[in-house]
Amino acid sequence: QVQLVESGGGLVQTGDSLRLSCAASGRSLGAYHMAWFRQAPGKEREFVARTMWSGDGIFYGGFVKGRFTISTDNAKYTLYLQMNSLKPEDTAMYYCAAKMTLAGTWTEWGQGTQVTVSS
Image (cartoon, rainbow, N blue to C red; front, side, top):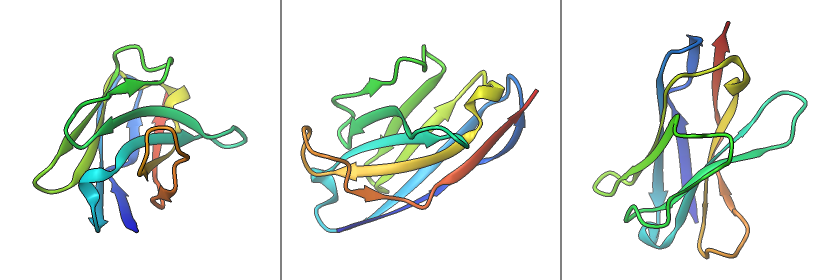
């Protein structure tokens, strides 16, 4: 089992940047696929980006369009999401997730970190 703790959210203005972090702990961390999701009030959870700890297999949701970058620090088992040119529609709770297999469901979730972008 993996424990995930997100941090780095906050209140920013349109055009600002934020870097979210997700500290992972547990057994066999290197075997997990990692991802960021987000959920805005009244909306379904939305896929943001995924990667493996090696940095392979990076894939972004269609809305990202070069504004966000997912990365990892293998020494610290920390997942990052660098978000640039933030827009009010990026306002959401951002969650870190993990799973053991590429085709499986995301089984491990953090508690989330709130990002609010004011216009």
